[in-house]
Amino acid sequence: MLIYAESPRGKFKKTAFEAVTYGKKLADLLGTDCAALTLGTLTDDAGGLGRYGAGKVYAIADAALDHLDGQAYTAVISDAARQLGATVVILPNSSGGKSIAGRLAVRLQAGLVAGVNSLPVVEGDALRVRKPVFSGKAIAEYRMVSAVKVLALTGNVIRPEETGASVAVTPLTAVVPAGRIRVKSVKTQTGRVPLPEAEVVVSAGRGMKDPANWTIIEELAESLNATTACSRPVADTGWRPHHEHVGQTGIAIRPNLYIAVGISGAIQHLAGVNSSKVIVVINKDPEAPFFKAADYGVEGDLFEIVPKLTEAVRRFKAKN
Image 1 (cartoon, rainbow, N blue to C red):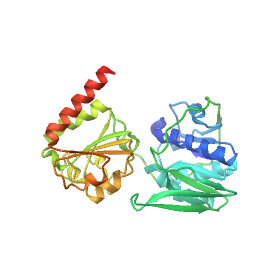
Image 2: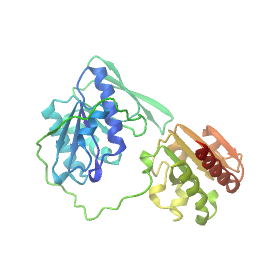
Image 3: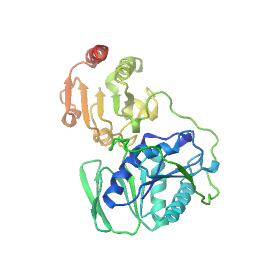
Image 4: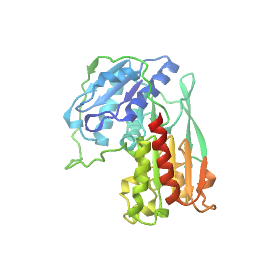
């Protein structure tokens, strides 16, 4: 089994540790070894992946792989899988993983299930895999019978677990094709945890009335060590940057806690957040559709409720 460990700009993302943890659990079910693969120049310790279950770590440390190129990455990962005899390849279902998964399945003549959120059932040489479909409204089940299988793991559905120890890193040689993409500059979000990886998210909509009022959302997020988000109308009007837009046409997220403030809960927004483990809705409209999807609902004026909630969180933290 081979796991691609995502490491943009030389540092492992949370998705890498999730994928390795998932891969270790599946390898145990299959009675096989779990190996991780890193690409490009790393600043993090690749051997540290052993703590999450990788029995072996292979590295293709070619500077040509320092920036994501879906075609080049596919060629290299497929070459590595063949060299190592991997019959199961696991990668994150992130934006980078999505640019690789389909191509990889074609190159390896493999079956592919993207967006898996649980361990499969082993049936001899076959895997029975489940995943949510139709924006989480149904569950589809796939029976993978191909000799090689590719699984793309949904983020934030498995908690990284440190079950082992660091291992030695083995260099691996692969032909890196000339890429068609030229990276001229890279702009990255700094500060808070990126939305796809966030475990707590505080989001707000047009109920904020004015972008100047966003301070109370920022303060609540800060008290919870949360990442901020917004609905599409807020991003479209320029109140908040587009990288904070969550929903069907924005970023789909799966945090442990999602707090929606002043958002009505249109179906397009719900489609991107309904995989959240706990949803809290704050809205003065008792007929807001979001209340039907909420685990907890607070009906009232957000300008009164949110500051009180922030203060309560701060008091709790000060005592604990």
